[in-house]
Length: 373
Image (cartoon, rainbow, N blue to C red; front, side, top):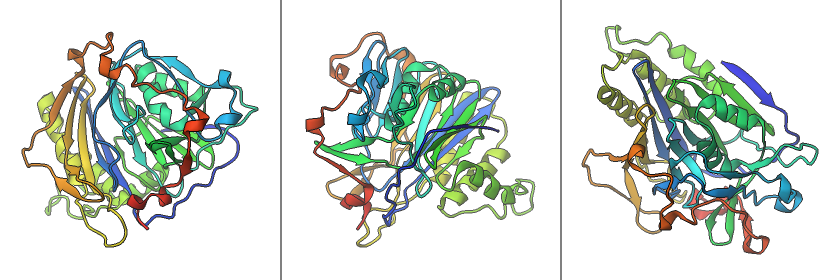
């Protein structure tokens, strides 16, 4: 694993005052004959469970919100989509938090609290500026593999940003780290630590939440000896829902799976492992929602097919309701979508600069009642 530090000045301290510890898990069936990624979205608020699409030719410009007046207009990253993609958005926006493009590049954003500190705008850095929450849509539309995505990250000044959660109200600096995977089996992890962008190249096949990715790898080493040949069958496998336990459990399960004989078996394996890492709804009185799994997705990077499974739906306020137990995923085959023609309903589904007079309030996570008191 190679680490590259992109030096970007200063820090932004974000609030971590919330009783809810949000969770997500991501695993990769990375075999010579199959490259299947599976991810769970574990979140205590209705972050969105709808599907969005990016179409070739759509024009975008980064929307940084925070310190927008300090960034010259000609330094804002603008782009025209080269590749079509499917994605799940953050808070019903056009900003991709998870997605896959027609080239087999996948991106997933997972929560990383306590240690995430995004870079702030540095006027001495003349690279194009890209808001951190626009990075997903940008990379999916511009890069065909992990190596290309890393080059694009290094060529931009990625800075703190905010996401619209309701008209005029923007949530700033939700702490996220990203993984990138492609159909060759290559992976990378992107984290924002102490105001710097850290890129971990040739990363492994599991990612959860905190601590940082290198620390997760170190903690998981104590489970390296667990294997299916033991008399008690994976005796000692961690079974709780902490980030560290899910990371180690994912690693052990992947290590002990046989090589799949088909993509069908690889999809089964991916679903099995990500289901074992999924978090049930556990009510916590007077402390908002717990971080339960609200949806899962399988991404077949070889065949460019996505399978989505919405586990619960929200029914007003903080109440969630389980979906019917059908066992079925919804299949989205990117090969069957004409990404060269923009449907009317997606004509305005692009990222654009928000006029200053439309930004009424910028809040922290702790200001949202859904995040707990």
